[in-house]
Image (cartoon, rainbow over all chains, first blue to last red; front, side):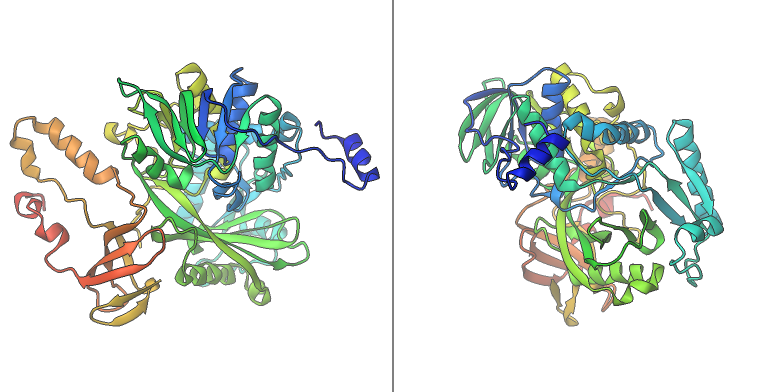
Amino acid sequence: MKYSIFSLARAALSGHKSWARTWRDPAPKSHYDVVIIGGGGHGLATAYFLAHTYGIRNVAVLEKGWIGSGNAGRNTTIIRSNYMLPGNTGFYELSMKLWESMEQDLNYNTMVSQRGIINLYHSDAQRDAFARRGNVMRINGIDAELLDAVQIRKMLPFLNYDNARFPIQGGLLQRRAGTARHDAVVWGYAHAADKLGVDVIQNCEVTGFTRDANGKVTGVETSRGRIGAGKVGMAVAGSSSRVAAMAGLRLPIESHVLQAFVSEAIKPLIPGVITFGAGHFYVSQSDKGGLVFGGDLDGYNSYAQRGNMPVMEDVCEGGMALMPMIGRVRLLRQWGGIMDMSMDGTPIIDRTPVDGLYINAGWCYGGFKATPASGLTFAHLLAREEPHEEARRFRLDRFQRGLMIDEKGQGAQPNLH
Amino acid sequence: MRIACPFCGERENGEFTYLGDAKPQRPAMVALEVAGGAAGEAEAFYDYVYLRDNVAGEMDEYWYHGGGCRSWLRLTRNTATHEITSVEAAPGTGASSSPASTAGTIS
């Protein structure tokens, strides 16, 4: 079904009872050219680009629960491309461009809103670092503006500018950054991939790999039977180590829990995204009015999808330090997601030492914004057997070769505290 | 998640700092001189520094009680449920017990 103003009007006249399924619910076939493990944003985007851009349509996406039930439904919906290091800069800008055309490409309203992101700075040294980052972005054709406190105050008059420890001196603004509706991104890719013939198979947990005499992966064992595959790509975020272990691999990844929070809805207050890195806090406001915010990892290995009180307290303290006015806003919900923390903080999109198995992992706490580019570049790797130009540095063996991309200078265990 | 420190009693986990999996042992520097030489050692250090079992289930791990008695502790904790089944003081374990600490001469 094609969504348009006319389909909306037609459905409205019939009391919204005539909507067709957004994607089918197919039974798994016995064999696919490519099987993608993981029905999150990255897995579904990969399937979409395989079918749309690379002409490989005999593709299945296997999801153990329901699509988008992992980190795709647990993030804080921020999209941005304010990266500095070679490897990241081009990749995230590719992603930003794909966000800008996503709704037309997918025929789905993913509510992409380029409301801007401001990273606040509080010292001369931090300003220099942000000036450098902004300059690198601009050299690479990405928009960036360095603002001083007067300019920030015009946009965000409600911040506490005179915090004794972290007075706000200014910020780095990327106007093209913003937010998108995370669930709609999942549904949009499922919808568009399904229309191109991709089977989106839910409630289908991968329990092992089938391999031939040479060790090449020939398919997967699942809770719904054996499924043959020409190639298998895994995009399972926090579960990467568990899935890779089924193929006998150990990864440079630790799974950690990251919490996110949303307040009760209030009237429009925050125009864009604000990050207060020094205070371990960032915030935006959803279209429903809730303040969506978060902070740092809890700091210990976890697969539990829930965090603990000390970090909740820390994040709320950061919020209070930045915007004392939110003190009387009540917290509505809080949840946790499992981050696949790579050792340098940068993702991995590569072949694995196991023939026929490809990996897309290590997104740390930055996977959502990467969704479209991750899908495109992983599809490129699966289809062409060579890395996409913008993802060629995201190698699995970069730790062994000393080619880390340490954008933030930290991985799973920063040991900075 | 609360951790029952053997010295201080049960405390909230914000008092503690996490080191991680207690299983990896720092490779001995002496590996430099054995057959295989630098390549073998680089491989061993790559494994130690970067690769993880990333256990989903019970894992032995080191925690530091920086907000209390400042002792290193060794916990058995389930990473899937956060359930802690054992806490013990950890002097003499970890790096200080590994042969590398005597063989390694970098200081």
